[in-house]
Image 1 (spheres, rainbow, N blue to C red):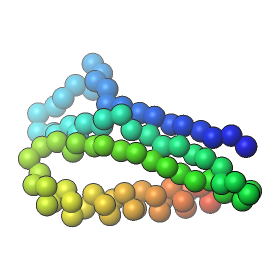
Image 2: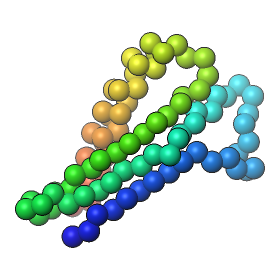
Image 3: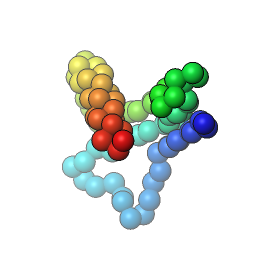
Image 4: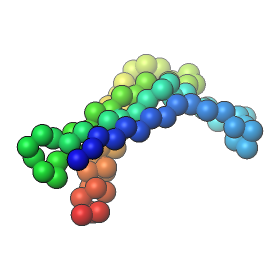
Length: 86
């Protein structure tokens, strides 16, 4: 069994220029490691790292109120999608 790494970072592209009325967030280098769990066939440990700047003039309290829940929802949906593939 092997480990996998997926990485990403923010990019600019001429086909997707900034548009008036929209705020563009910024992703610093981020990604995840998928590592087999020793002694537990069919199980994988997911280790992720993100540093996202949502941009705009959102107060920190607003970001802090929804961002953790959105990350929890992301991993819950990821778990459901992986189980559906089995």
